[in-house]
Amino acid sequence: MYEDIINLPHHVSPTRPQMSIIERAAQFSPFAALTGHSDAIKETARLTSKKLELDDDMKATLDMKKACLVEIADIQPQISVTYFIPDKRKSGGKYVTITGNLRCFSEYERIMILTDGRKIPIDDIADIDSDLFYGMF
Image (cartoon, rainbow, N blue to C red; front, side, top):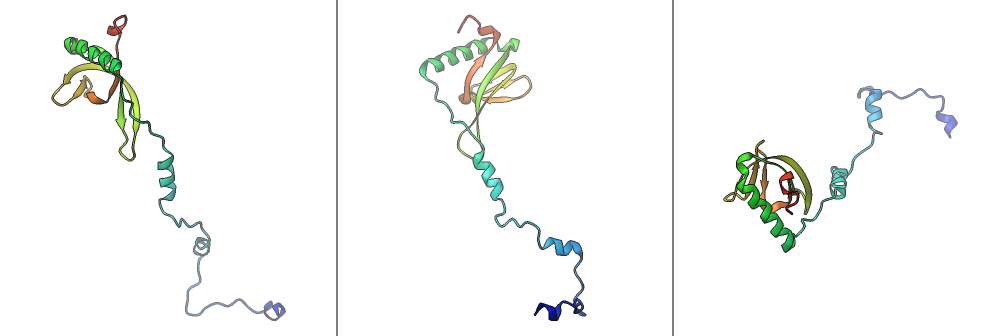
């Protein structure tokens, strides 16, 4: 049966143009049937932390540190603040620590403002550290 057609000339259509090698190769290229699936997998795998609930002792220490800083904010002390940043896409978030000089507290807006303009939500602060506190807390 194969012997009947093996020596016949290759058929070329008179009405349709011949496909280029690139077009023919494209037929066999990988196909992403689930668009965005790999992005969804990566997002699910991305880890977030749960916001910790501070106990009463930690809250009291943090309040004393804030009170000390409010009194000396005019000298713009250098501080390191650890605070929680909520994740915009899923539950949880992450804790970050930044260092800078304190400009002021805005109790009305519930934020701490650093001299470089960064704003930190007071309710998300987990700890404040400074050379000023050594031996005090």
